[in-house]
Length: 272
Image (cartoon, rainbow, N blue to C red):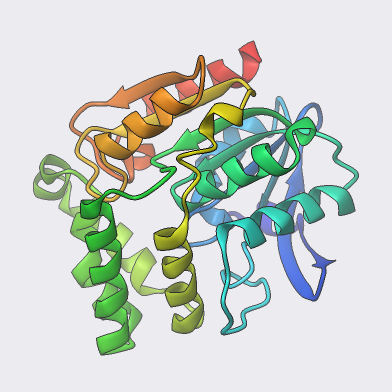
């Protein structure tokens, strides 16, 4: 993240939690919610593209980055309330909500809890409920961290779940960067473990018909975490939603096929 971006970082007290956030650009607000791994910087390239057209708000979920980290039970609904609270504190009445993986699960709760606050939804590599494969992959990654309590070891055991076989085999330098990023985590392992459990417990599958906002669903065809089964549940459950598949890409298709993803996201926002 460039120094220029870091200059815009601030902290807001949401309930009992300090939430670090970036608020940059002008125009219609776009809120970016990161996934289970990482923090707001997962959106770096998208922030660079969107900030000239929109007011972009990206933040560290509680339990991640430089937001408050406490070993306590947490749900995707709790994280949705945090996000709505941050919007309140920034005077944002409504926004386009873009969530990746767990962030997309959080976004669904926002649309269900406060539909008037959500202009549109963009769900990237996300799920309404994990299928058995997704559950197993998440459980194994959590177990590797619990066994080793070492982020570098966790990254080595996990990185192959995030990219396609083709990407892993032919773009080793980029794979090393991803592994280094995951392995360089500074968050409390307990917070990752609690949020991993939150993903396992997330289930909006019977409520999807209640989501009426325009919704774009994007998924990698080779994603073992949020598989095509999970994608189909979202696509068939949210009425009139649009789905874009990224062939031969996995959970990190935002990196694997960045140009297509960024174009798809900007086109969606511009048309809604």
